[in-house]
Image (cartoon, rainbow, N blue to C red; front, side):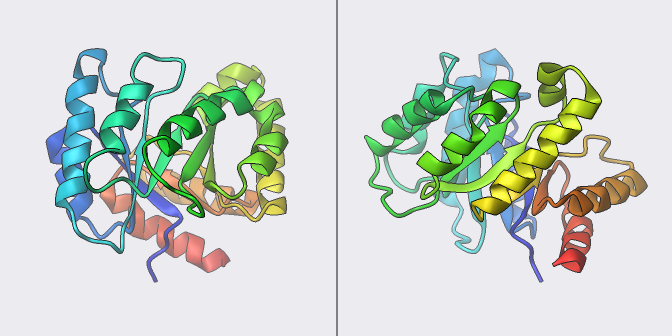
Length: 232
């Protein structure tokens, strides 16, 4: 069974990566305009991603775009290109939000362009302590719009400072998501050739209570699907 809680990342800056992701059997894609996309490639990447969405017709896939944060000069242009003229992404993944206002800013801009009433189209990345501290309000205010919460890795740890505290925060994020019946996804496992490490890390994530995870390589999808389905 295909598990739509395993999200395959693909760099928006690389046409070949987008093509591989779109042609893979991954049922859930995150096309990334933020992390790993050089500043001088941001404009090119957003147009590559838009063309990928426009030209791809498999409606059985969830197609999500990780836009740039609202504290950057890129986020508004990302939204303008993605949410005008033709097919739009199913979801947007919002990185580095600090509070309700950051998310509301993005929502307002998107909904000025598209009528998305009744649609769960937001994925919020909890990547810092500020966002965590406002998570209960975020989940309450945007509950009808949030499709998933994703948990940061190194960024969250850097914001918190201590691994022990970061682990407790991750557990609390999972608990809050369960309380609101919203999927909570583990971050990517970056050592993509280390399959035993990926397997162990995915089992650990499921034991903590995560709903699924993001992955960085098509070969990870079936491995993680099998593990996640064993916990359902």
